[in-house]
Length: 274
Image (tube, rainbow, N blue to C red; front, side, top):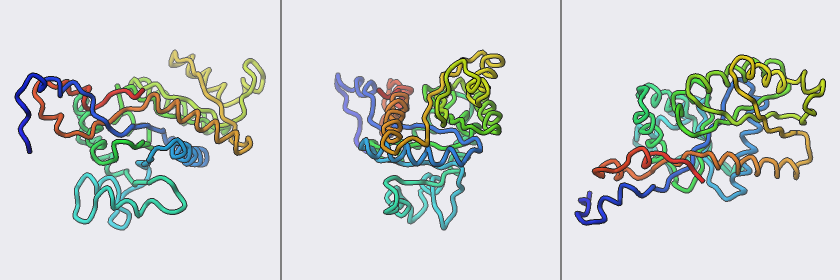
C-alpha cells in the first residue's frame, strides 16, 4: 500500500466524499403478495433509469448451493461479487442476493453506537459496484439495527387487507420509536377521497388514525393503483423510484479513507444522496 502524501493537500483527502453505491430499503412485514410484485417493479423502474440494481433479500437464507451475502463477506474461496452473475438470469435485469445470514451477522457485530453502524454499512458498500443501487429487503428488526438514526426512509407498503393494518402499524411503530426512521408509506390501492366513508373504512384511513392517536405521527401516504394500465403504472413506479433515490444512503467503497488521519469518518462512510 502506498504511503499517504505528506503535502498541503493531504488533509483535504479526508474531506472528499467518496463515490459509492446507493442504499435503499423496503420493509418486509408479511404481505408477500403485495411486497414482492412491488419490489420487482421498483427494480424494473430503476434499471430503466440506468442503474445496476442488487437486491439484498434478508428474507432468504444463504447456503453453499445458493450463496449470498454471508459468502461474500467471508471471502470464501470461489466466491466473489462477479460470481453472482449466476443469479442474474435472462428473465431479470437485476441481481438477487440471499442475505438473511449476512445481515444477521452484521447486526450481531454492531453495538448501539453510530460508528459501528456506519462500519457495517461501509462493509456492504465495499462489496458492490459504486455506481449501482442496493435495495435491502428485510424485516423491521433488521432495518432498525442496520439503519437506525440514518436519513434512510424505508418503503413501507399497505394493502387493502385487514391483516396489513396490524403488521404495517407495528412496523411503523418500531421504525419510529426504536430507530428514529421515518418510512415512506405506500398504499397499493386506488386513492379514496379524503373524508369519504371509503377512506374512513380503508386500511390507510385506519392506519392514519392509529398513527395519529398512538404515535403522534401524521401518515402522508402515496397511493399507487396496481390495477391501472401498464404504461401509467410504469410511469408511477419511475416517479416513486426517483423519490426513493432522493433519500438513498451513499455507501463508501474506499477503504483507504479509514486510514487518513483527521478524516471526518462519518461523512466518509455514509452521506445523503441528492
